[in-house]
Length: 394
Image 1 (tube, helix red, strand yellow):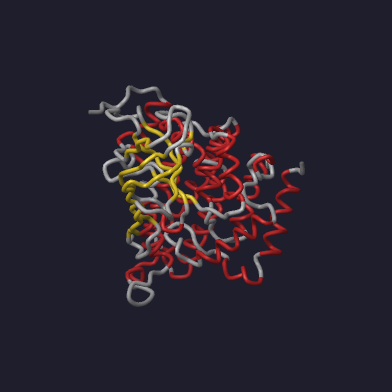
Image 2 (cartoon, rainbow, N blue to C red):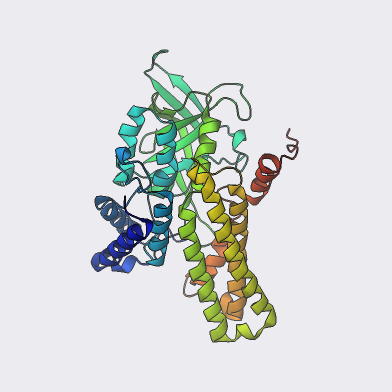
């Protein structure tokens, strides 16, 4: 196993050598609010990475990964961000479902699904939120019933219900779905974690147009959709535990790369403020200083959170980092618009062509909602970190 610096140097050299030619124009493309940008080309890039062994690097070698240490994974994500490589298209499969199957899946599930995540042949989305169960995941109403088979297996799960805010569902092949499989169950009990193919009768995907004018989130309707009875992760009724583990993996090592992108955005805001004179305003200067210190705090939180990753999965303390970076990024969007001044009110073109600053401002409003709203994260911290009494629930 190479040292961290050797691994970093290898990654840097590979990215420098391969973000050229047909892939040169992908630098900086994609990401939150911009997932529509060059999606097919980014998919081709990621498959190119897979062929060279640069996907799923933290997975054990027996599952197609490189067995990279935590420090090596951090180094890779930082180098990837520093190279301005395009936003990943297979991250939900690689960073969420894959680790979940490695931890809780059956040998047959690992053999079926993990290789196609590594090779980026199949893309995944996450079926958690519902119209009446957004941050309150335990309130899901989507149901699944067994059809056929016996106690020894066989048959299908038949899924009926609706999921919403499903990122990249319109580009995905499969969805991991939290559904209620025990009639009459309530809250955390009676939920199961199912792997459901999307290209089938009984599945309808409707893109949701966002404030940015783009549509990376979707509504997904299941009307008698089917999946094999063996496509359940864990035991029936054990879905809450599996789903929470998946959310833990979501707070993983890629957050260090995220900080590089944040730093690049802040640097650009500072350069704009100097160029257009906004930096002469003492209030703007104060907000820039606060943004800089906030970014350093985000990095400290992310490094602290990695202790949990090293132990298997981040604990509830990861919610501290989520609240902080989400709020910081939303405020950065507000700062950027104030630095732009009146020019920030002008679209870049017709009919609704936004500038990068406008897109940052609009999309970052969602940062404090997706992947667990700030309100829910505060509850997690209060109840599971500080040990305060649980919030009263009906």
